[in-house]
Length: 511
Image 1 (cartoon, rainbow, N blue to C red):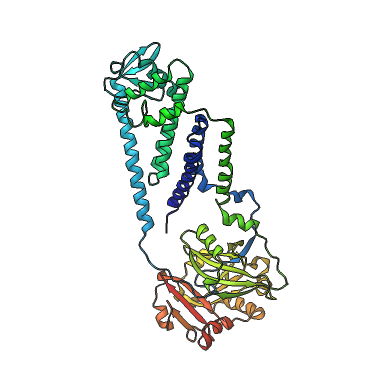
Image 2: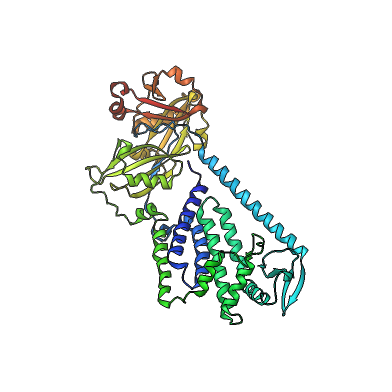
């Protein structure tokens, strides 16, 4: 199973790659550099938010059905045989460890770069040239700026180059380009395994240089060719710290081509409108199954009377229903599938029983595989040795101490216990109190309304992990090692197991 965090990251970086594909294909060569700056920042933010966005919350919620969930060993199951779970290496955990190792390495790298920059700052001293404050460094590095500070070694540059350098770096400082660069570095740490995160940082730094070159030339304080020659001379110097926006960051060819390019027409700004259908399309897929559950028409029952549930094969489940389960229930185990029809055979639906941990959940699908209702689990009433109790107390029982167990549903349950028993009643008797006054009184009331079909463990067919066994061998199994116990009785038991199941079937799955 892939951990939820990695699924989130895969979705986020997939969206980021799509948005960057649009940028490199249609927007990068436009001269709307400020728009491109906003686009790249927006692409990074949208990619992080996309996996948690769900447009289904804006639509009406699907109807919720009520379904009784009994203890695993007390369920009167009508499902087909469950699919056994297979142990497998936990590759998801290894992937998660690998991911966090990459995050730590890149985070440490960023801290080291920050420490290096801090050391350079401490070694520098304040200076002023033509009214522009900066920090004078002794190292032979390219001029650069970080936050609101310019760093350069004036001894490396001639009088003709210093005005261009200072004008260039002042644009970086004035427009807070450091924020963009830091955001790009953080996104690269989060998505280090994806080329999208690396491309985003590169695109952001490249576009910041386009912005700065355009602003420098727009002041008309420098001739374009003079400015470009300055770039060529500076390209021979050692680069500045990796954390900053250096003076000559990208290939000079790209920057010079952009400076000499014609201004993009306003009509070409319409390309940015292509982002809207792309974003809406992505949002429509942010929770497609949940959305389709609301939009899909739900057929009303064609006739009165209770629905008829018939176990069927898992392969009968429509592919889109399986896709919904995979998306909505990571780490699920599909226990069984049933056909649900109205009493006259109409209104076909499929009910999937899904195990999440130890608690089963049920989801209904229409014939096309769209979920029409999610089943909310509710608890029945519990009676232990003739007295009302809670499910938590029942869960503590050792199956070896039980003498009898009976499940009441529907009208018999309501007749005995009123509307509070609308979700069923589980009656449990232990061997120690089988003849107590409370048990005898309750049994008398139950027999008058719904005579019990007692399950004689000595006569019942007992299956442990698919193999037939005896009651004595069953009682040797530790309760802690039992994962699931199901009981089949009556026609359902005979239908699945023939004459052997006529006295009831007990199906046990161990951990």
